[in-house]
Length: 229
Length: 229
DNA sequence: TTTTTGCTGTTTGCAGACAATCGGGTTGTC
DNA sequence: GACAACCCGATTGTCTGCAAACAGCAAAAA
Image (cartoon, protein in one colour):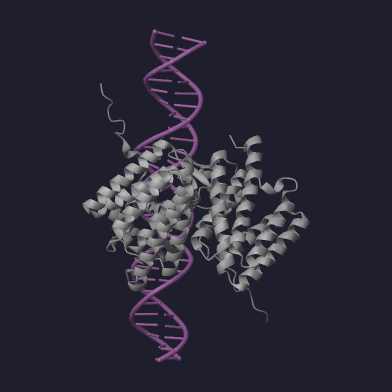
């Protein structure tokens, strides 16, 4: 007899977690725009849960920096200024180059194989042109990269930073030609890691983010991020 | 007639924040030991607030990594393994050297003056031998360092890491002779920053943390951290 | 026009209630 | 005595009602 689906009850996740994910997704997808007020009661009936769950989820998102709470005025989807965006990319370059270096020097062979697979998936997604597939593939690549770095703190921090980048509501991918370059850069990074060349991997990661930062910041200085209200 | 205290109620901070700080302090001071269960109701009557505030504060501390929640069993003061401690010091070295470099290159002259003052305060505290004064002075130094780095993300992340280090319940300061060396290292760091030598500041910060890490990890491998229950 | 006053919507916090769940002890069986 | 099934107390997860505090705004007063 085959193994019956062990995960029948994926209901394990508490309501709070579900609400968190829903809100995160709503913010990332742009359904909630930066600057928009999030009224408790509205969220409650929108999601169909009690205030307790909503409030605790909001606290979590606040800790992640996705929303900002003003006393007695409630939470608001965080906005991110040009200067903050610059700082964000700056520290992201630092952490990702560290992750790349650690991966190259300490990652297991299996992890390298897995990384190369995500690169191929990314290339395929890029060819397909599907926006969601591209984002998924890129997320998978970064996830693999961070896992291979063998540092839970770096992984946590980078995940948080990635979430916040979406507040800019503009993936640098949307720039013409940027996607192709991105594919190339990522392939190079993976190659350096596969060759166990930590320094080169770090340099490539750093450069990759710096380019993305330049594109994003240039765009941002011309088209200020759209906020709600 | 003298001005009557206008600030009778500086109740600005919401209860939740107060509870957070109380709990953070209780954990940092060792009143709550790693591994100890934190029962909601006990905390409620201990602090004298309702469950709502306690639960939201717990969510915040969980996001910071100070406590860990198990489904239907409640929160527990986080423990930190040897491997995690290694990773923590590793990323801390990375971020602090970055902060040091940025400070040296972009800090204002006023900030440099302020930094030098915290160094002197630290030296004075070290001479006094008072544990709490030393910790305060060192905190002030780091706070100044992070502020001068002009990067809110780095500051946030480092603050979180500093909080978690206290879970080890052993400041590397307690090692004989370590305090004197620490004073020396910090003076050197500040000097490099004052000279605007970013590379040297970064290298010194990195070395400073690496030494602290070595001391702490050596100690940790011999004396496993005491947990409660 | 400027200041004061009061209203309204919203957050903040408390208390009580209930279901779901977990761990541990007890019971029953072999 | 060993082991499994079962039950029970404790605790969390969640919901709801209620009171107080506060920000923003508009109307009233100067």
